[in-house]
Image (cartoon, rainbow, N blue to C red):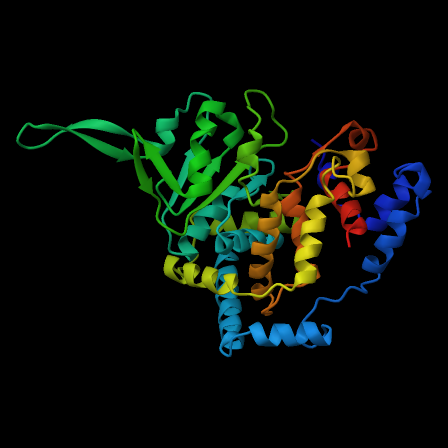
Length: 390
């Protein structure tokens, strides 16, 4: 797969390439341009208590607890400390690290797509050290069985010679789980991850075992090699909060990687957080207020990915085959709250929703032949839909 496919075009570039043919005839290529221009000029300002309308500012002030400013600062300091530790082991990947940390605090899972050797496994191992959380790695292969992931009941003999059935836990029983090349496993094995990823529990022989929180799955897949792979079922793809595209490092970054690994191949990050602190950060994020206008914008954005809806976007009618599920709206709001705290705010802005739209939606919408014919990637379609969403 060519790297260019993953590059995000700006709204103006996409509109310029497609106008007027990309739109329905009656629009004459002006509808999207008119909606995109204000965004491109930066006229949509993230709302804070200072910049929002009077009634909005008053609502934000009322919902903000007295201790919120100090807690927001503590939240930001904790994230910065983790980033500093990860920088000891990881070169570049700033956006990837930000989104992975956002997903961990929000309680979601992440699908990483990138060629081998760009540091995906090292990132998870280093995260385990910085967050003081147990880490396990599952290498998915065609012969991997569900019990190899979840665990199985085995017969065990005690010192007295009595036989008993004991549950042997699988590698999924960890706080950070790397599902390496997840699309190499058969659908039967992939289905073993559904309950784990959504409900954070494992059921074996009518017995349910709860996983320790926080629980996070980071799965990887190779976009180039397709032999011996099985496409992930839609139900499983939808359970990933984000899909992140790991690009190839620059020449300078490669040089830094070489120099770093000449000193040691081991991770050197030190623990700065623990599971309890992460759960406290998650609870703080839940209380971040979201004004009604931003909630409506989020709902409209997800609805505008569905071509079958009557009042949907022209882009969805032309380029989208299947739209995003309600989980997309949930993920956008949940992660927007975390992102707001990461940027020192106790309120969600339009910028949060628009920035997160790409990792949240790119794996949840399916493009039709028109998009392929016009050489549009999922991110390009999301850009157009954002321009049509009010």
